[in-house]
Length: 101
Image 1 (tube, rainbow, N blue to C red):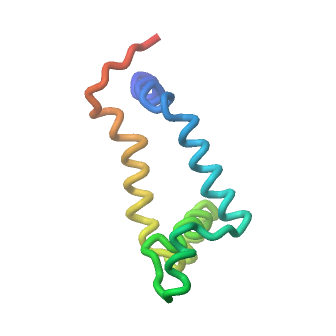
Image 2: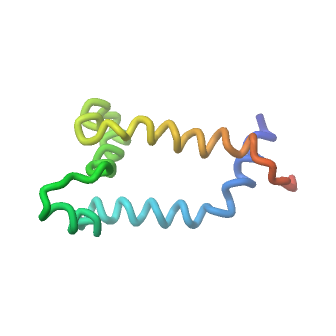
């Protein structure tokens, strides 16, 4: 188990700052109620983008409001499964050599 966490951290530490930056940008847009560029184009046309409501759905998931997340965008559940798979299973099967300290 210890080797798994060492391997996990070694794999993700290269991108840790990028992960934090993306999270801050997404939730900054959410907290400030800023429109995304694609919504500025599609909203006047009356179209809805496939990712509309994903940020609000992820906030609902963090609050453990499963039905509220589903109501905002049902795509949140496959997306969460993909993200968890990327973070926890992908490093195990990567071919990169990881040096243990």
